[in-house]
Image (cartoon, rainbow, N blue to C red; front, side):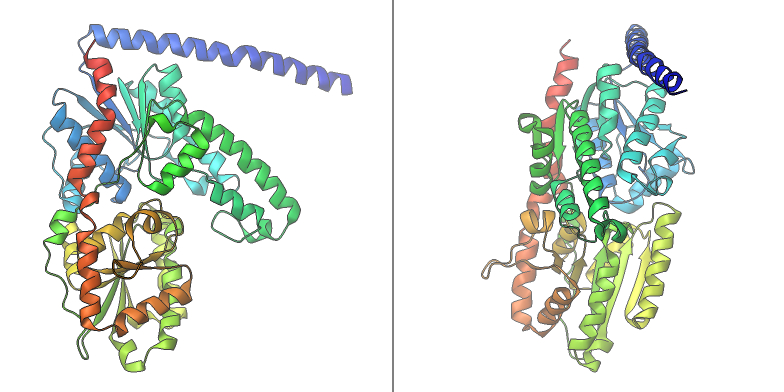
Length: 480
């Protein structure tokens, strides 16, 4: 029996070695013929954006739509395709939502290709080995996208690096990617090594030396796979200094990596009238702008509110209200909102907390005009579009002391301070209390400094950087 099992395993191994290269070779030939057929049929030059959640309404989607508009303006004859998994939204509905949420309109039509296998990239599909599961699931989604339409230039705009070898090596496309957040980072490895409890490191693993050691091995293998796939991108765009450092460390492609800050609507937000300063007995509104995703760590802000209640007077507490503003991608996000509402009741904060979900850009501007303190809690936020938007509206921001807010956006040194950084609920509460107790002149100085520091994150600066980065890709094709 032992020899039989060994023989079966050996034969299976040999067949795999033969079968996989054969499939790859056949697929390469097939797509090469498809590209030649499309060229002979006079199909226009095309760019495909892989963005399965294109209708989510978050900062990543603003990057997508601004990038598309920039391409349509610079290269008007280019056909633009978006691969999306938003099956419940028609093209007209998606475009309408873009106009409502971002005030972006397009000079030409966009073609949407609907992908039906998006469940393979949803975190809920993989209770264990989530990173690996979602990454391999993106390959399934990528194969569906390739067989639906093969573009001349393929751009992964949502962080699914495992699709890059598909379109580059097998599909023969020129490839690019915009990395919002590395799928794995050295910081994640450090947290597992030090056995710290976190979003990516459950308590059962953190408490077990054996499980922690196994998880480190898993993370290192996954990091190698992620690095291997990332090198198939001809051009890499990253959204912050923090992301750039991690991508260069993992992918070893510094010569083809370009920092392109994401587009923030700083112009229209800077035109908003700044909220009046805190007056005697007037409301003190705090806002948090960001998608309702687990990594945004909204519960930390609820805990900070609980701590704040302990250090301010009852009269002042009655003036304070925290308003959560964000979008929900799916039912999982909607459940998170409900859980946060339950947590606010548990902490007796329900009278001082409000949730505004999937509001329009006009409504967002109204909320920003009626508040003067902004909060952002995500650890290692890749950049922080919500942080910049609040600062452009004249807010004093309190953001997490890590990632993009720390390295690119917020300056804490006296004389040039434009916001505050904090690491836990107590530090957040202390920062909020400090802002409230400041003199109006001191607050006004920080608000002015915040507004004047955000021009480098404007939509115009993004368009310049994005087009400058992808121009060689277009020149490579259009010069033929």
